[in-house]
Length: 174
Image (tube, rainbow, N blue to C red; front, side, top):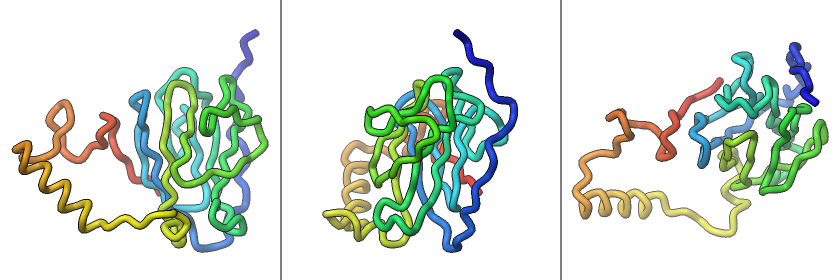
């Protein structure tokens, strides 16, 4: 049975505890947009009222949201499916509608045919990892590989620079 879409946006919740979170969602499958987000709440769905508009017919108008909850400590974010028609998945497990669950750094979130990798970029997030990234060493290795393969610059199909390597355009939200 086809369930009609809800035509009203879900109510906003109070996330004004200060500070704000910083996350990056990188679309790794399905060609959706990637985003760098600063704030306490990120709304995801097909409708243009969302913070990140997802171009997939299997995604509901107001599909899900990610909410910062600083009192949770290391896993400071919650993912909530807003009662979507086709559901949401975190690490291949279905998320129960309207039952927020913790979202951790490097979790995989799927809505429709779009699959995202979640990065917590906020204060203290790096300390929660079991390893440290030496950014200078990473940059040096990237430069070495670019020289080795004689790549002048990183360009995406269509000749545009600065897009994510998934072919989707990176967007800064809020």
